Amino acid sequence: MDFKSFLTAKKPRRSNRLEMKKIENTVKHRHLGYFDILPLELKFHLLTYLSVDDLSILTITSKAMRNLIDGFKTTRPSGRHLLPNPFHHEILTQSEKDEYYYRFKQLGLLMKRSTCLYATKDRLKFVNDFLMRIICTNTKNCENPLNCIALICFGKFLHTVVAGWDDSECQRAFDSICLHTGALRNVSTILNSKPGLHSKMECDARLFFRRVFLDHCEFVTTRSFWLSCIFKSWPMVHQAKLLYLLYGPASQNEILWFEMCDNTSENCEESVQNLGNMANAIHCLYHYNEKWTNDNAVSVVDELTSFPDQWLSENIANLMLLCGDGIASRMLISKAINGRIPELSELMSSFCTVCVKNNFNINYVVSSLWRILEVMNQPKDRIMLLNTMMDMYQRLIMDLHLYNDPEVDPQNEIYYAVSAITELTKTLLTITFKRLLPE
Image (cartoon, rainbow, N blue to C red; front, side):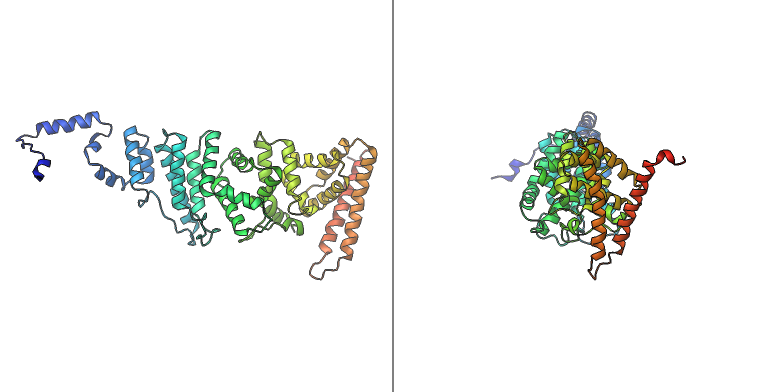
Protein backbone atom coordinates (compact mmCIF):
# COMPACT_ATOMS: atom_id res chain seq x y z
CA MET A 1 0.00 0.00 0.00
CA ASP A 2 1.37 3.36 -1.00
CA PHE A 3 1.38 5.71 2.00
CA LYS A 4 1.38 8.70 -0.34
CA SER A 5 -2.18 7.91 -1.34
CA PHE A 6 -3.33 9.11 2.08
CA LEU A 7 -1.61 12.49 1.71
CA THR A 8 -3.12 15.47 0.01
CA ALA A 9 -1.61 16.32 -3.37
CA LYS A 10 -2.52 19.96 -3.14
CA LYS A 11 -0.22 22.20 -5.13
CA PRO A 12 1.15 25.05 -3.01
CA ARG A 13 -0.05 28.50 -3.98
CA ARG A 14 2.13 31.52 -4.39
CA SER A 15 -0.46 33.68 -2.63
CA ASN A 16 -2.30 32.95 0.63
CA ARG A 17 -5.13 35.35 -0.24
CA LEU A 18 -7.81 32.62 -0.40
CA GLU A 19 -6.62 31.07 2.86
CA MET A 20 -6.85 34.42 4.60
CA LYS A 21 -10.33 34.89 3.14
CA LYS A 22 -11.34 31.49 4.53
CA ILE A 23 -10.02 32.47 7.95
CA GLU A 24 -11.89 35.80 7.79
CA ASN A 25 -15.13 34.01 6.93
CA THR A 26 -14.56 31.59 9.81
CA VAL A 27 -14.01 34.46 12.24
CA LYS A 28 -17.05 36.29 10.90
CA HIS A 29 -19.57 33.45 10.89
CA ARG A 30 -18.46 31.18 13.74
CA HIS A 31 -19.60 31.81 17.32
CA LEU A 32 -16.11 31.62 18.84
CA GLY A 33 -14.46 34.09 16.47
CA TYR A 34 -10.65 33.85 16.29
CA PHE A 35 -10.76 31.19 19.01
CA ASP A 36 -12.45 28.84 16.53
CA ILE A 37 -9.36 28.83 14.31
CA LEU A 38 -7.32 26.98 16.92
CA PRO A 39 -7.20 23.18 17.13
CA LEU A 40 -9.37 21.65 19.82
CA GLU A 41 -6.43 20.44 21.90
CA LEU A 42 -4.92 23.93 21.91
CA LYS A 43 -8.27 25.40 22.99
CA PHE A 44 -8.40 22.99 25.92
CA HIS A 45 -4.81 23.85 26.81
CA LEU A 46 -5.65 27.55 26.94
CA LEU A 47 -8.69 26.89 29.12
CA THR A 48 -6.46 25.32 31.76
CA TYR A 49 -5.05 28.79 32.48
CA LEU A 50 -8.47 30.21 33.37
CA SER A 51 -9.91 30.16 36.86
CA VAL A 52 -13.17 28.42 37.70
CA ASP A 53 -14.84 31.83 37.99
CA ASP A 54 -13.70 32.77 34.48
CA LEU A 55 -14.88 29.47 33.03
CA SER A 56 -18.22 29.92 34.76
CA ILE A 57 -18.71 33.34 33.19
CA LEU A 58 -17.66 32.10 29.74
CA THR A 59 -20.34 29.39 29.79
CA ILE A 60 -23.09 32.02 29.65
CA THR A 61 -21.60 33.98 26.74
CA SER A 62 -22.76 31.59 23.99
CA LYS A 63 -23.96 28.07 23.38
CA ALA A 64 -20.78 27.22 21.46
CA MET A 65 -18.57 28.36 24.32
CA ARG A 66 -20.72 26.45 26.80
CA ASN A 67 -20.35 23.27 24.73
CA LEU A 68 -16.60 23.79 24.50
CA ILE A 69 -16.20 24.20 28.27
CA ASP A 70 -18.52 21.27 28.87
CA GLY A 71 -16.25 19.11 26.70
CA PHE A 72 -13.22 20.49 28.52
CA LYS A 73 -14.70 19.47 31.90
CA THR A 74 -15.53 16.01 30.60
CA THR A 75 -12.07 15.27 29.17
CA ARG A 76 -10.16 16.86 32.05
CA PRO A 77 -12.32 16.23 35.14
CA SER A 78 -9.37 16.29 37.55
CA GLY A 79 -7.47 19.30 36.32
CA ARG A 80 -5.39 21.40 38.65
CA HIS A 81 -8.29 23.77 39.25
CA LEU A 82 -11.45 21.91 38.18
CA LEU A 83 -11.57 19.26 40.89
CA PRO A 84 -9.27 20.08 43.81
CA ASN A 85 -8.35 17.00 45.78
CA PRO A 86 -8.54 18.08 49.43
CA PHE A 87 -6.50 16.31 52.06
CA HIS A 88 -9.67 14.97 53.64
CA HIS A 89 -8.22 14.05 57.00
CA GLU A 90 -5.48 16.61 57.38
CA ILE A 91 -5.96 19.20 60.10
CA LEU A 92 -6.67 22.38 58.15
CA THR A 93 -6.90 25.93 59.38
CA GLN A 94 -10.24 27.67 59.08
CA SER A 95 -8.95 29.85 56.24
CA GLU A 96 -7.84 26.75 54.31
CA LYS A 97 -11.24 25.13 54.85
CA ASP A 98 -13.00 28.30 53.69
CA GLU A 99 -10.85 28.30 50.55
CA TYR A 100 -11.93 24.73 49.74
CA TYR A 101 -15.59 25.54 50.44
CA TYR A 102 -15.45 28.58 48.16
CA ARG A 103 -13.78 26.54 45.41
CA PHE A 104 -16.47 23.87 45.48
CA LYS A 105 -19.19 26.50 45.57
CA GLN A 106 -17.72 27.99 42.38
CA LEU A 107 -17.55 24.51 40.84
CA GLY A 108 -21.24 24.16 41.60
CA LEU A 109 -21.92 27.44 39.81
CA LEU A 110 -19.89 26.24 36.82
CA MET A 111 -21.83 22.97 36.72
CA LYS A 112 -25.14 24.83 37.03
CA ARG A 113 -24.38 27.17 34.14
CA SER A 114 -22.81 24.63 31.81
CA THR A 115 -25.72 22.18 32.16
CA CYS A 116 -28.56 24.70 32.30
CA LEU A 117 -30.17 23.36 29.09
CA TYR A 118 -29.83 19.70 30.05
CA ALA A 119 -32.68 17.55 31.31
CA THR A 120 -32.76 17.01 35.07
CA LYS A 121 -31.90 13.34 34.61
CA ASP A 122 -28.70 14.22 32.73
CA ARG A 123 -27.73 16.92 35.20
CA LEU A 124 -28.08 14.46 38.07
CA LYS A 125 -25.69 12.09 36.31
CA PHE A 126 -23.02 14.80 36.45
CA VAL A 127 -23.82 15.52 40.11
CA ASN A 128 -23.54 11.87 41.11
CA ASP A 129 -20.36 11.43 39.11
CA PHE A 130 -18.89 14.43 40.90
CA LEU A 131 -19.93 12.98 44.28
CA MET A 132 -18.38 9.59 43.57
CA ARG A 133 -15.04 11.21 42.72
CA ILE A 134 -14.65 13.10 45.99
CA ILE A 135 -16.58 11.11 48.59
CA CYS A 136 -14.83 8.75 50.96
CA THR A 137 -17.18 8.56 53.94
CA ASN A 138 -19.42 6.04 52.21
CA THR A 139 -16.63 3.46 52.38
CA LYS A 140 -14.85 1.71 55.20
CA ASN A 141 -11.59 3.44 54.26
CA CYS A 142 -12.42 6.85 55.71
CA GLU A 143 -9.88 7.39 58.47
CA ASN A 144 -11.64 10.14 60.37
CA PRO A 145 -15.24 10.86 59.24
CA LEU A 146 -15.76 13.57 61.87
CA ASN A 147 -12.96 15.75 60.46
CA CYS A 148 -13.35 14.71 56.82
CA ILE A 149 -14.31 17.71 54.69
CA ALA A 150 -15.30 15.76 51.56
CA LEU A 151 -19.02 15.75 52.39
CA ILE A 152 -18.99 19.42 53.38
CA CYS A 153 -17.37 20.31 50.05
CA PHE A 154 -19.94 18.29 48.15
CA GLY A 155 -22.74 19.91 50.17
CA LYS A 156 -21.52 23.34 49.08
CA PHE A 157 -21.38 22.12 45.49
CA LEU A 158 -24.85 20.54 45.59
CA HIS A 159 -26.65 23.51 47.15
CA THR A 160 -25.17 25.81 44.51
CA VAL A 161 -26.25 23.49 41.68
CA VAL A 162 -29.87 23.03 42.86
CA ALA A 163 -30.46 26.66 43.88
CA GLY A 164 -33.62 27.80 42.10
CA TRP A 165 -34.71 24.29 41.12
CA ASP A 166 -38.33 23.25 41.47
CA ASP A 167 -39.21 21.16 44.54
CA SER A 168 -39.90 18.12 42.39
CA GLU A 169 -36.43 18.40 40.81
CA CYS A 170 -34.81 18.77 44.23
CA GLN A 171 -36.70 15.68 45.37
CA ARG A 172 -35.29 13.79 42.39
CA ALA A 173 -31.81 15.01 43.31
CA PHE A 174 -32.28 13.77 46.89
CA ASP A 175 -33.52 10.36 45.74
CA SER A 176 -30.72 10.00 43.20
CA ILE A 177 -27.94 10.87 45.65
CA CYS A 178 -29.34 8.60 48.36
CA LEU A 179 -29.64 5.78 45.83
CA HIS A 180 -26.04 6.08 44.65
CA THR A 181 -24.62 6.27 48.17
CA GLY A 182 -26.89 3.66 49.75
CA ALA A 183 -27.87 6.18 52.43
CA LEU A 184 -31.52 5.14 52.74
CA ARG A 185 -30.56 1.48 52.95
CA ASN A 186 -28.29 2.31 55.89
CA VAL A 187 -31.02 4.38 57.53
CA SER A 188 -33.44 1.48 57.22
CA THR A 189 -30.94 -0.79 58.98
CA ILE A 190 -30.50 1.75 61.78
CA LEU A 191 -34.22 2.35 62.31
CA ASN A 192 -34.99 -1.35 62.50
CA SER A 193 -32.21 -2.09 64.99
CA LYS A 194 -31.67 -1.30 68.65
CA PRO A 195 -30.11 2.12 69.39
CA GLY A 196 -26.32 1.93 69.35
CA LEU A 197 -26.13 -1.47 67.66
CA HIS A 198 -24.57 0.05 64.52
CA SER A 199 -22.77 3.01 66.08
CA LYS A 200 -20.43 3.71 63.13
CA MET A 201 -23.27 3.51 60.62
CA GLU A 202 -25.33 5.86 62.82
CA CYS A 203 -22.56 8.47 62.93
CA ASP A 204 -21.93 8.16 59.18
CA ALA A 205 -25.64 8.64 58.40
CA ARG A 206 -25.79 11.68 60.71
CA LEU A 207 -22.78 13.29 59.03
CA PHE A 208 -24.01 12.47 55.52
CA PHE A 209 -27.48 14.02 55.82
CA ARG A 210 -26.34 17.04 57.80
CA ARG A 211 -23.29 17.91 55.73
CA VAL A 212 -24.80 17.24 52.31
CA PHE A 213 -28.40 18.47 52.73
CA LEU A 214 -29.01 20.38 55.99
CA ASP A 215 -26.01 22.36 57.23
CA HIS A 216 -25.66 24.57 54.13
CA CYS A 217 -29.28 25.80 54.02
CA GLU A 218 -29.38 29.60 53.96
CA PHE A 219 -33.15 29.82 54.44
CA VAL A 220 -35.48 28.13 56.92
CA THR A 221 -37.83 27.08 54.11
CA THR A 222 -34.98 25.28 52.34
CA ARG A 223 -34.05 23.44 55.51
CA SER A 224 -37.68 22.51 56.06
CA PHE A 225 -37.84 21.04 52.55
CA TRP A 226 -34.76 18.83 52.99
CA LEU A 227 -35.97 17.67 56.40
CA SER A 228 -39.29 16.66 54.87
CA CYS A 229 -37.42 14.74 52.14
CA ILE A 230 -35.57 12.78 54.83
CA PHE A 231 -38.64 12.14 57.00
CA LYS A 232 -41.57 11.70 54.66
CA SER A 233 -41.09 8.04 53.71
CA TRP A 234 -41.07 6.90 57.36
CA PRO A 235 -43.82 6.47 59.98
CA MET A 236 -43.96 8.83 62.99
CA VAL A 237 -42.06 6.55 65.34
CA HIS A 238 -39.18 6.34 62.86
CA GLN A 239 -39.33 10.08 62.17
CA ALA A 240 -38.74 10.69 65.88
CA LYS A 241 -35.76 8.31 65.87
CA LEU A 242 -34.40 10.00 62.74
CA LEU A 243 -34.71 13.40 64.38
CA TYR A 244 -32.64 12.21 67.33
CA LEU A 245 -30.17 10.55 64.97
CA LEU A 246 -29.62 13.85 63.16
CA TYR A 247 -29.62 16.31 66.05
CA GLY A 248 -29.49 14.43 69.35
CA PRO A 249 -26.48 14.60 71.72
CA ALA A 250 -23.46 12.75 70.37
CA SER A 251 -19.82 12.09 71.19
CA GLN A 252 -17.09 11.69 68.59
CA ASN A 253 -17.82 8.03 67.94
CA GLU A 254 -21.47 7.42 68.87
CA ILE A 255 -24.94 8.85 69.31
CA LEU A 256 -25.82 9.26 73.01
CA TRP A 257 -29.25 7.65 72.77
CA PHE A 258 -29.90 7.43 76.54
CA GLU A 259 -28.57 10.87 77.49
CA MET A 260 -32.03 12.44 77.81
CA CYS A 261 -33.28 9.47 79.84
CA ASP A 262 -30.47 9.57 82.40
CA ASN A 263 -29.19 13.14 82.80
CA THR A 264 -30.51 16.69 82.90
CA SER A 265 -28.80 19.88 81.76
CA GLU A 266 -27.03 21.91 84.43
CA ASN A 267 -27.62 25.30 82.80
CA CYS A 268 -29.21 27.06 79.85
CA GLU A 269 -26.12 26.71 77.62
CA GLU A 270 -25.99 22.95 78.09
CA SER A 271 -29.71 22.53 77.40
CA VAL A 272 -29.39 24.53 74.17
CA GLN A 273 -26.37 22.44 73.16
CA ASN A 274 -28.21 19.15 73.77
CA LEU A 275 -31.71 20.08 72.63
CA GLY A 276 -31.44 23.27 70.59
CA ASN A 277 -30.93 21.65 67.18
CA MET A 278 -33.78 19.19 67.70
CA ALA A 279 -36.09 22.00 68.79
CA ASN A 280 -35.10 24.13 65.78
CA ALA A 281 -35.83 21.24 63.40
CA ILE A 282 -39.27 20.68 64.95
CA HIS A 283 -40.00 24.43 64.86
CA CYS A 284 -38.85 24.58 61.23
CA LEU A 285 -41.14 21.74 60.13
CA TYR A 286 -44.07 23.01 62.20
CA HIS A 287 -44.04 26.54 60.80
CA TYR A 288 -42.66 26.15 57.27
CA ASN A 289 -43.88 22.78 55.99
CA GLU A 290 -47.51 22.70 54.88
CA LYS A 291 -47.59 18.90 54.96
CA TRP A 292 -46.65 18.85 58.65
CA THR A 293 -49.92 19.22 60.58
CA ASN A 294 -50.42 20.02 64.26
CA ASP A 295 -51.06 16.35 64.90
CA ASN A 296 -47.75 15.47 63.22
CA ALA A 297 -45.87 17.81 65.53
CA VAL A 298 -47.55 16.44 68.67
CA SER A 299 -47.03 12.83 67.57
CA VAL A 300 -43.35 13.26 66.71
CA VAL A 301 -42.56 15.09 69.97
CA ASP A 302 -44.49 12.46 71.92
CA GLU A 303 -42.58 9.64 70.22
CA LEU A 304 -39.28 11.47 70.54
CA THR A 305 -39.59 12.04 74.29
CA SER A 306 -40.36 8.37 74.93
CA PHE A 307 -37.48 6.96 72.87
CA PRO A 308 -35.43 4.86 73.58
CA ASP A 309 -36.98 5.13 77.05
CA GLN A 310 -39.08 7.78 78.77
CA TRP A 311 -37.16 11.05 78.96
CA LEU A 312 -36.68 12.82 82.26
CA SER A 313 -39.49 15.31 82.73
CA GLU A 314 -37.10 18.24 82.98
CA ASN A 315 -35.60 17.42 79.57
CA ILE A 316 -39.08 17.27 78.03
CA ALA A 317 -39.88 20.68 79.52
CA ASN A 318 -36.61 22.07 78.16
CA LEU A 319 -37.34 20.75 74.68
CA MET A 320 -40.86 22.19 74.65
CA LEU A 321 -39.65 25.60 75.80
CA LEU A 322 -37.03 25.63 73.03
CA CYS A 323 -39.62 24.55 70.43
CA GLY A 324 -41.66 27.68 71.11
CA ASP A 325 -45.02 28.55 72.59
CA GLY A 326 -47.10 27.15 69.70
CA ILE A 327 -45.78 23.60 69.92
CA ALA A 328 -45.54 23.63 73.73
CA SER A 329 -49.16 24.77 74.11
CA ARG A 330 -50.43 22.10 71.72
CA MET A 331 -48.48 19.40 73.53
CA LEU A 332 -49.82 20.43 76.95
CA ILE A 333 -53.40 20.85 75.74
CA SER A 334 -53.24 17.47 74.00
CA LYS A 335 -52.22 15.79 77.26
CA ALA A 336 -54.99 17.62 79.13
CA ILE A 337 -57.68 16.59 76.62
CA ASN A 338 -56.52 12.96 76.72
CA GLY A 339 -56.70 12.88 80.53
CA ARG A 340 -52.97 12.39 81.13
CA ILE A 341 -53.10 14.45 84.31
CA PRO A 342 -50.26 12.81 86.33
CA GLU A 343 -47.92 13.21 83.35
CA LEU A 344 -49.12 16.77 82.82
CA SER A 345 -48.64 17.78 86.46
CA GLU A 346 -45.09 16.40 86.47
CA LEU A 347 -44.37 18.31 83.28
CA MET A 348 -45.74 21.59 84.67
CA SER A 349 -43.62 21.15 87.80
CA SER A 350 -40.58 20.65 85.59
CA PHE A 351 -41.50 23.80 83.64
CA CYS A 352 -41.20 25.76 86.89
CA THR A 353 -37.81 24.21 87.67
CA VAL A 354 -36.47 24.90 84.17
CA CYS A 355 -37.63 28.52 84.35
CA VAL A 356 -35.80 29.00 87.66
CA LYS A 357 -32.63 27.28 86.40
CA ASN A 358 -32.53 29.33 83.21
CA ASN A 359 -33.77 32.61 84.74
CA PHE A 360 -36.97 32.61 82.66
CA ASN A 361 -40.10 34.44 83.74
CA ILE A 362 -42.38 32.17 85.77
CA ASN A 363 -45.40 33.97 84.28
CA TYR A 364 -45.01 31.72 81.23
CA VAL A 365 -45.82 28.69 83.38
CA VAL A 366 -48.83 30.44 84.89
CA SER A 367 -50.24 31.43 81.49
CA SER A 368 -49.71 27.87 80.21
CA LEU A 369 -51.45 26.49 83.29
CA TRP A 370 -54.35 28.87 82.70
CA ARG A 371 -54.79 27.66 79.10
CA ILE A 372 -54.72 24.03 80.25
CA LEU A 373 -57.38 24.61 82.90
CA GLU A 374 -59.60 26.32 80.33
CA VAL A 375 -59.70 23.25 78.06
CA MET A 376 -60.54 20.90 80.95
CA ASN A 377 -64.29 20.35 81.06
CA GLN A 378 -64.50 18.71 84.47
CA PRO A 379 -63.85 20.84 87.60
CA LYS A 380 -62.56 17.77 89.41
CA ASP A 381 -59.84 17.36 86.74
CA ARG A 382 -58.73 20.95 87.28
CA ILE A 383 -58.52 20.46 91.04
CA MET A 384 -56.70 17.17 90.55
CA LEU A 385 -54.11 18.83 88.29
CA LEU A 386 -53.37 21.62 90.80
CA ASN A 387 -53.18 19.22 93.74
CA THR A 388 -50.98 16.78 91.86
CA MET A 389 -48.56 19.58 90.94
CA MET A 390 -48.08 20.50 94.60
CA ASP A 391 -47.79 16.84 95.62
CA MET A 392 -45.17 16.40 92.92
CA TYR A 393 -42.98 19.06 94.53
CA GLN A 394 -43.43 17.48 97.94
CA ARG A 395 -42.29 14.08 96.67
CA LEU A 396 -39.42 15.61 94.73
CA ILE A 397 -38.04 17.48 97.74
CA MET A 398 -38.42 14.44 100.01
CA ASP A 399 -36.71 12.18 97.48
CA LEU A 400 -33.83 14.59 97.09
CA HIS A 401 -33.50 14.89 100.86
CA LEU A 402 -33.20 11.12 101.20
CA TYR A 403 -30.91 10.79 98.17
CA ASN A 404 -27.65 9.26 99.38
CA ASP A 405 -25.50 8.79 96.28
CA PRO A 406 -21.98 9.86 97.44
CA GLU A 407 -20.99 10.92 93.89
CA VAL A 408 -23.88 13.36 93.45
CA ASP A 409 -24.68 16.35 95.63
CA PRO A 410 -28.47 16.86 95.72
CA GLN A 411 -28.26 20.30 97.33
CA ASN A 412 -28.48 22.17 94.03
CA GLU A 413 -31.54 20.20 92.95
CA ILE A 414 -33.23 20.84 96.31
CA TYR A 415 -32.47 24.55 95.91
CA TYR A 416 -34.00 24.67 92.42
CA ALA A 417 -37.07 22.69 93.50
CA VAL A 418 -37.72 24.95 96.50
CA SER A 419 -37.06 28.08 94.43
CA ALA A 420 -39.46 26.87 91.74
CA ILE A 421 -42.36 26.23 94.13
CA THR A 422 -41.64 29.53 95.87
CA GLU A 423 -41.69 31.56 92.65
CA LEU A 424 -44.84 29.83 91.44
CA THR A 425 -46.59 30.47 94.76
CA LYS A 426 -45.59 34.13 94.72
CA THR A 427 -46.99 34.59 91.22
CA LEU A 428 -50.24 32.78 92.00
CA LEU A 429 -50.74 34.78 95.21
CA THR A 430 -50.14 38.03 93.34
CA ILE A 431 -52.77 37.09 90.75
CA THR A 432 -55.23 35.94 93.42
CA PHE A 433 -55.03 39.12 95.50
CA LYS A 434 -54.42 41.51 92.61
CA ARG A 435 -57.40 43.74 93.53
CA LEU A 436 -56.06 44.27 97.05
CA LEU A 437 -52.50 45.09 96.00
CA PRO A 438 -51.25 48.53 94.96
CA GLU A 439 -50.53 48.96 91.28
